[in-house]
Length: 340
Image 1 (cartoon, one colour):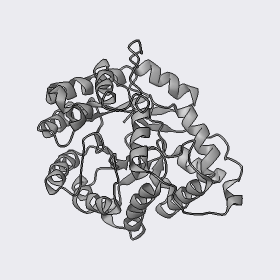
Image 2 (cartoon, one colour):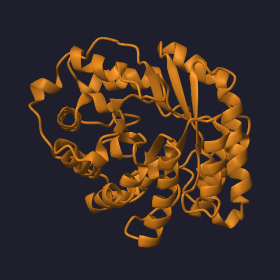
Image 3 (cartoon, one colour):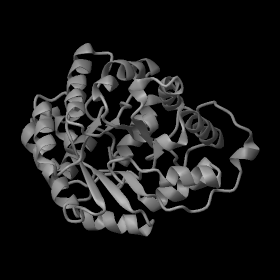
């Protein structure tokens, strides 16, 4: 979700703490790796005016100091803005993820949105924008997986072919994976997308404590429904930054990957907004250690534009993550099958 202030507010509510995973400080102070242009930014958002309005509605529910209400005079960004951001960092391709999932959010229930109509309109907006530069932009539609219209929207775009894959955002949709009915609905959406051979980007972490148990439920009861489709786990199974919950969730995936569990054979992780200015040397070292355990080939770069840019993300990640030059070259040049 591209609401920086709201994310920070929810982090405070959750009481997010340092990981406590330690690596020798000398390693944390190693020189940052050299600049290597990414092959793709795997996590970009552009949004219509309707999404800006929805963000304003959500922000009205929080303290004004904790949520950035969009300026009434803000520009609505589109393909030309994305290309400029990619060019600034010499990034070849960009994967634009629709924010149509917003309209089914329980945080917006009081608005009584026509969820099906407004989700379709937002997905159409993304389709129109990526069509302006199809050589460099790839688009994903999105749905609230708990909405009544979710399956119809997946069918429409699977047949339409203007957008390549599906984005789900569990936090925005108020998902609780301890609720069997919600798991059933999400599994149906993921299963349909898998049957139609659509790649997926899934923001797994909810805006609250998301336990390793829930990560296990996702891996056991939902991920297998994707079949042979690729699934990219947004924010490396976290949500804006590094914390113990993120490490626990990522470790749950690592356990399956290390034993070659077939269910995770097509699972990738993006590093979007994972390394932040608040990331400590110990947290950065712990993340790098988990990345090596999982395999660097499974990690791709993303910026969370329009909240951040590829350049700012690249600068921060290289400065703080401290992979070796060889390791950084692998990660920066990784590219998901649908992007390159």
